[in-house]
Length: 209
Length: 102
Image 1 (cartoon, chains in turn red, yellow):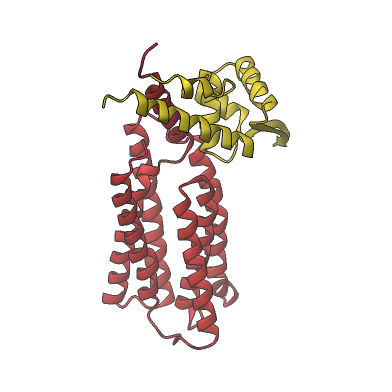
Image 2: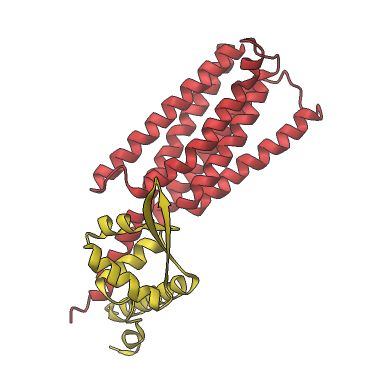
């Protein structure tokens, strides 16, 4: 009997489990990429004073589209590198988990504009930011059932903070004229960078192979 | 080499096909029959036989439903299956450690 059979079996198990799970190794670069985009968008928004609802919405929706496209490209590249199919069952599951909360968040944040006949209310930016943070958190939490456990906790963090910020906003604890770019930059930039860095560092130590 | 860990290996799991099924299910909450079949490159009959064995051991739960008016069979690991799989991995790791040159 080959004395390495147990090691080979373990390797086969790892490969199969990885194939069954989402591209864990792609998660760190995706988070870092999204974080850099988030920080850059916040900086552009603040420096160029893109404070009207149209400018704010345009900047951040554009950033979201870029981030999503980039994430797909990184995942695709990783799949090709590992000779795996890109549109695998786990990728499908994650996509299915992500889209309903993201779409609902988009719809709800734009609702005041629809109701206002195209005019955004004065506190639209803050309202849209909190809605996006909340529903993005819900999307991450849902996708977290098919991804590393940390993603679920990361989603819960967004949900908790958005609920707290909603409360503070309704209780007038935070001024409604605060630049929403700061909040967007913090949640979609800095937190993603931090999580990406954490994943990158821990993966290097404990490779999921 | 101490043969003890090897003798403790779960025979229901210690088979290439069934080990593949258990590994895939351990990393995903549930997988459909076709997903398993395609990923493991098994025939329908082969996969059915292996799933039946694992089902009889109480390691795998099979649920039948309909999706877009088409029957859908999904498989998932039971708590007992998860435990048995973890024990199997532990034993393999033990064997690997034993075989490592000191």
